Image (cartoon, rainbow, N blue to C red; front, side):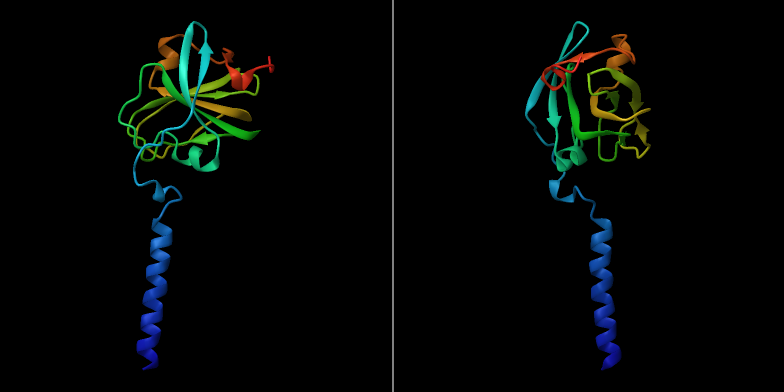
Length: 158
């Protein structure tokens, strides 16, 4: 009797643990892309319509599950404090370019990210903003570190 109860209890705990371990933080998003409020950003001669991810949950989901994005659409991730920011592409179906952006809108560094990978892409110094665009967006336009982004998020910080 005790052995049977022990086996049932152990099986129950094992099942609960397995479900917790296998359930990532974003599991309740149902595999659907999120739609967030947008802001207009400017880089050189280009205007960007960027969705704004400012809560932890919004940043966790990011651009997951998107199958396409407009040519000048993107997502800007806003953090409360500057820090070394690292991004990966799990459940992100489209390849992206990423720009790590300083408090005043200056691009610190950029990188190219392959779809559905877990490779870390990190800022080279602490930043408060990260902008994701379609793959190659920055390179095709000659946008490099040192270029400034304009918009409401950076107003008065130049």
